[in-house]
Length: 118
Image 1 (tube, one colour):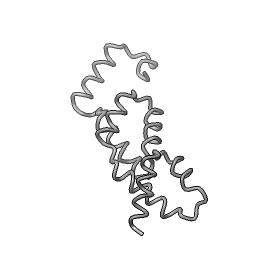
Image 2 (cartoon, rainbow, N blue to C red):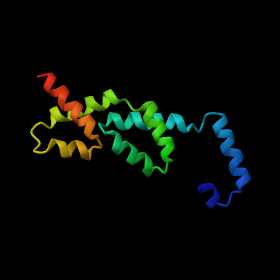
Image 3 (cartoon, rainbow, N blue to C red):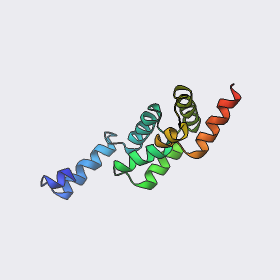
């Protein structure tokens, strides 16, 4: 879109993009994997990650495929558990976890694990 706004012809843009994809300079799949891994490392839950990816104008079917392939559900539960431990003095830990994008089922699983580890 930027190249188009700058006056480049569609044919030239398509040719350049095709070359970049062929040479693996542009690799949407790799970008999606890295983005999901990075966001999980920031202790964000699935819902927040999907929201952030949507803000990058990625198609929803592409995001769903990426979540299915690269989102680590076990790490998600461990992230929620870690936040529960660090923020144990917080009045409403549930609200904190929801605001970080964790699903209800992830929160329940993290609470269960917390109880088991006591």
